[in-house]
View 1 (cartoon, helix red, strand yellow):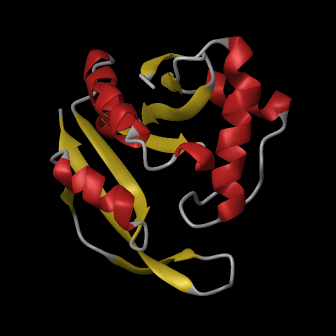
View 2: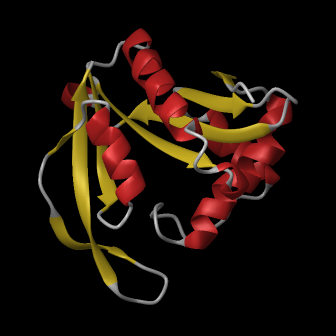
Length: 162
């Protein structure tokens, strides 16, 4: 089914929270440990510079991304983003559409760089996608991410000039 990526609407928040929380509960990609209820999700998504949703042909939200400054002041031109795709829809290249959209949106918002601070080294599908789209790995931070079982995985920062 064709996927459309667009700005989120308030009515999308329950689906967005469900997808976000699914990734948080998995505990292998996002640093967050607390899930979002509707009120927290509403505030969280409203606080971003941009939130994009991937919507399928039937109108269902199947993925999302958030875009915001990575830092403030003299580093405020660097954006950061996070992506989430519904578990049942992974493998359909929805993540690629979200990343491509976020690159264009970051540039449109006036950012000059998109940086990922903490891509978990074991998230090989995301890493291959980022590298295929021109992101450059900046190094490795040993044991930077705590997995659900208490073990630690390396994290790999990435950037892409816009």
